[in-house]
View 1 (tube, one colour):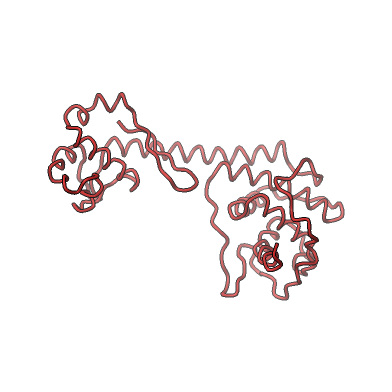
View 2: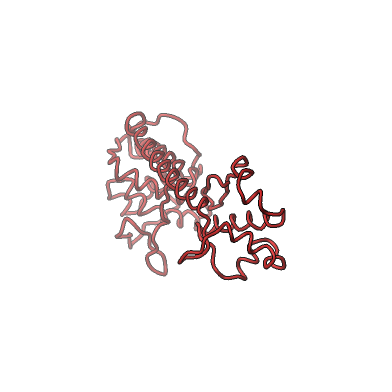
Length: 265
């Protein structure tokens, strides 16, 4: 009857429908067209809510698609749901959601691990540029546009604002994000070599990867490269005195972004 629940990066959901299973079910053979429509609308609502439907008759009436007809179709439709402590549930939908969530979790973990492994074994940075960047930084000399900051951020996991400390955006499991993070680490090493007078970037794979995930979740590739160049070329004491690690860059990335925007970049 129902199929796999998909969730993309924007939070949208979709439900695959197994046509052969649906047409062999009693929900299809025993209900009128009107009842079938209400039933499928309630399955969509249950899917969006993660499984259970509320017991509120007003919510159910609206979710069925036509509140005026709810009392008429209710007996046949809810016969295919069971009432539990958390609301009305459809057993088949619950099974599908549990299985699809399990598959999604495994794919996410596998994708992140795969990207990290590929980076370690095939793309581990050697401090030299190995290809074109994902985007080009602004051509203006950034070092002269950023004034030294007398009050550097003490916490590398957060950024300082006028109103206090604001945590960086959370990182979500996402294979595409993991792939971008791996590529960013390679590109960072190349930029480090270029702007730190040929110095080799000594990476810490596990730490760098986690920091790169947070950076890639916050900025696109083009902006990230611009921020890296700003960080590596600025005269800011905090930026220049540290080891120049990706962790240090992340602690300063929002500050660089704010300074660049102030300069119209």
